[in-house]
Image 1 (cartoon, rainbow, N blue to C red):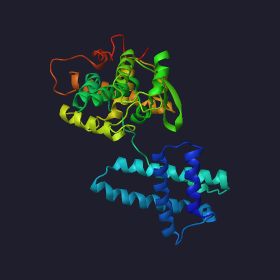
Image 2 (cartoon, rainbow, N blue to C red; image 1 turned 135 degrees about the horizontal axis):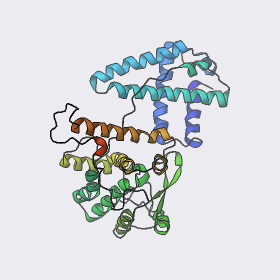
Image 3 (cartoon, rainbow, N blue to C red; image 1 turned 90 degrees about the vertical axis):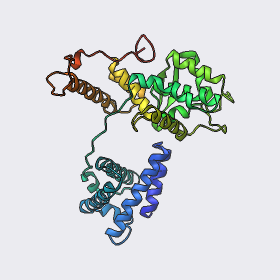
Length: 343
């Protein structure tokens, strides 16, 4: 088996057994192609299976240095240093996963891979919308649609994204029949990353919006997409993203205001309302609690910002407000008066 054939079997394994998303598989395909392309030039020939086991730590570091040099050139043009580091980190992860697969399935052991250091990256903190902006999104975006069907659809879609904290792909993969469980139990069964399922409670306001949308749905059969496009197929994420770009431009909001920012807003507003971190982890479908803990850091960053602008000893020049962050009022409740999503 050649190295290229080994990559193909690895990607097939990722797809069928690991149930990795198509985007992840394609990213790993590109990353491994870059890795093997470098090794073919560096070692004067594409290594076979035995050659893969003999790639040294020095060879690995030469590859990373090559990637860093190319990233530095790209950074001058359009990228950022941290984004480039995240890309290199992903490529190291792809190579490690590939060699773990080779060791388990083909007996190709290479200890050098385990010694390869991962580039350090700064995990960006979530940047949520304010409660006021998040609550305005569904109605305001719906008002920009050109047809009555699109208005009803977009209003329900964006309310669902914020009200349940869904990824845009999770919402768009729902079918009409998925609302049957919601009607009887008040929860939605969501299929997230890696086809992992979770149950998400649905606020009465969101449930009413979805039921109202079904009355305008062009083909409300169980197997039909819950959110169809104008031509009847499943609505594409790019359409929803474009609608939000248009809205944020009119509203004068920054570029980070995307459909995914509504998911960040859902989690952050729950955190501000006192929700337990484990509960938020389950609602978001995070495999690791460390991923959810970013919202704790984001909340701390917000409190420090309030303090730095409001405290009279912070030197910010703000006059007339001596309240500390601890005594500052909390955000208004999300969506309903009894509090944000904690029921």
